[in-house]
Image 1 (cartoon, rainbow, N blue to C red):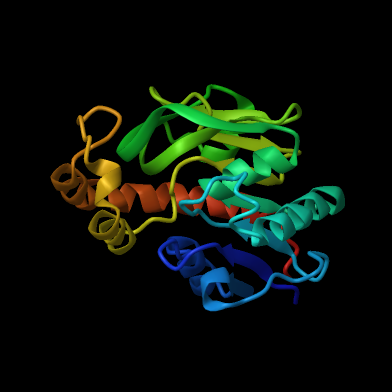
Image 2 (cartoon, rainbow, N blue to C red):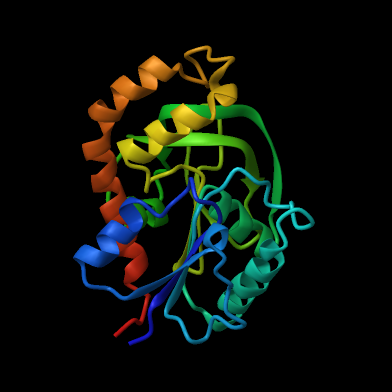
Length: 238
């Protein structure tokens, strides 16, 4: 059985609910944690899928984060060999960039629980299972313009490009559908400078986020399971 390769860029952005689902569904995976000293493999062909998590670095910070160069090589190899990719936040931006899109500063950074609106298209219905709208967690200062052959799946008031699919098998997401309250609260405890200018519009206050964790987490997990199940349809791990 070929495992799914899961890339964790930083100690503070662990895979969360994504690997919880893989474990519960008895799907094998290999976690590469860069902060723990792990090294990426030379090729993706020994894996059934490639999951790229988030991180505070920019998708173009190759000089300060050399492992990003190897990540892009694996992303392009996976695209070439039709090995399914799923990208969370930074991971979604990197997928977009590897496939010919561009990463840009977000016109309005998003931090907090925001309403995501799946498009009224067959592809969006396929991936989101008719869930519309949904409230998911965001923490990003950059966004992406999707690659030429991507199908846009969802947007939000402050960010037009919240999710896209490529060839029906690769999924890029701007939101943190894997984030559980423990992870979100850790970010609140350690990245207070990001919410110093909270305005309760695009950047929510710490108090509001902690409260809304318990309002939205259960429904967000249902969205995560839907997206993960759909992505796994094309992962040949057996």
